[in-house]
Amino acid sequence: MQQTIDPAVIEQVQRHAAAQKRRRQAVDAFMRVLAHVVLLLLSFMALIPAIWMISSSLKAPT
Image 1: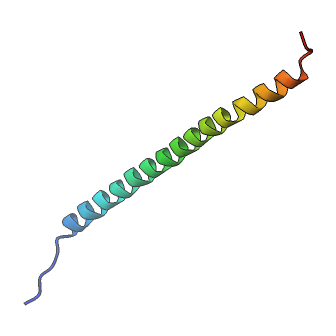
Image 2: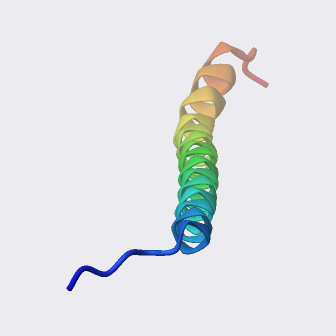
Image 3: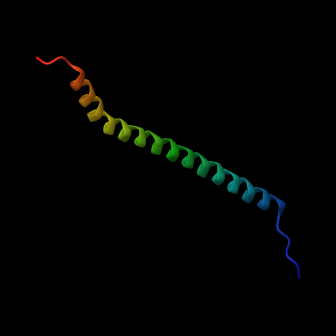
């Protein structure tokens, strides 16, 4: 005895899988952007003391 799957069910499952894939890709893209923003903020925070030190050394003594 062979069972056949209703084509409507197959289409529904495929649409659901495609929607999940799009959702996952959107979440992955958001996480990549968030990671880059965090890394940029941390790098600026690390550079601030160096910039302060260089600007202070170039000022005229008072």
